[in-house]
Length: 205
Image (cartoon, rainbow, N blue to C red; front, side):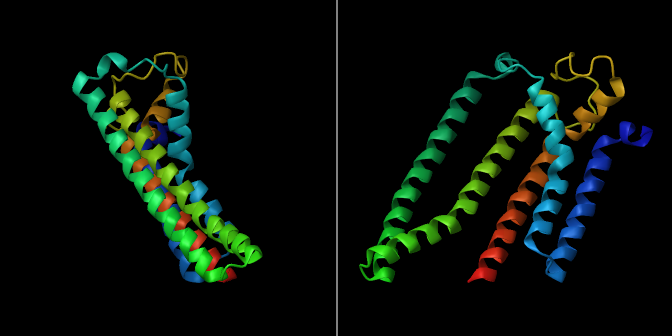
């Protein structure tokens, strides 16, 4: 336990590397999808749990005084650009899907409905993965502003009330809630979840 307290980020990275290797073995040996999903959850669990603990203890307005006017407007600008491209892509994709379904079903209403639900079930994991990726990036950005990029920073913006009477537990929580570790495990989990979904879909088709 003392080793984890002294180097929480190293242990978090070792945990992620271990389960990443196990996932590669699972892919090579064609393990069932449920085992993939369990391994993905275990891969991201330490950093995600620590992130939730740290961010939950941080008030919403805790970092407002740390943001510049440029940072405020630039983040809004990027958000609007992303929203515009997402909306444009959804319009084009929706039109393409609608046309494809009509052609595939040859105008038969019952087949149109069935194909539509099949397409929806195929696209839902992709949409969920994109939203998960956006959440991971957003949380990593907040963590970088809140605690910096050090393994266990001596000074940070993390509220003092977080595990105030348990210094070791606070050090582990802040160390595992590292923006780089969360970004790496979160993006890896998103990619692996999409891969597992594709494997499952190919099994049934």
